[in-house]
Length: 178
Image 1: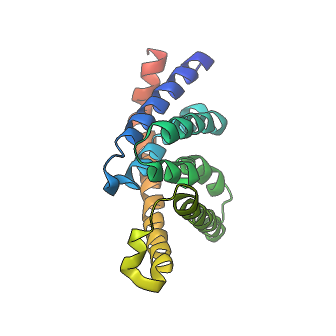
Image 2: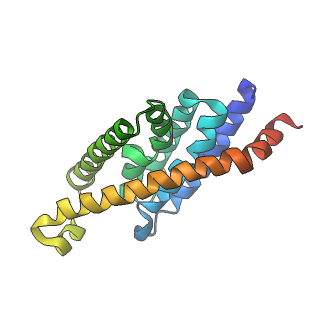
């Protein structure tokens, strides 16, 4: 892709990601929508490279923070789900599966704890869900989040394969006109 095509493609992906984040007025979707918006970075990484994909992430993060109805969803996008498709590619180039998973889980857990802190202490969103699990609430939620993350990572891997094998030719035709 030419530079102007990459810029246009990045703008389209940013707009789509922000539209997804604008749907976050449904509180049940506070985690699903940032994950979907983050997955939209897969074509950006493949077609434009990691540095331009991070630009799409940054633009979406800023716009989502100011425009999305759910600040919790915006924080989840900013803290982890938005940049994860870019990070995933970098980590998986290491070539050692066990090391890749250790790094992925460490980054994910650090992001979860950071997001939790920001949501509860900076944004002042109440910790209602923790009362369900009692004193072990944060630990139970972190364990469930880790299981969900592993499933999400596998899903992202499959979406990458789907994009490369089924959608990449169509996207490239749109921008090259061939």
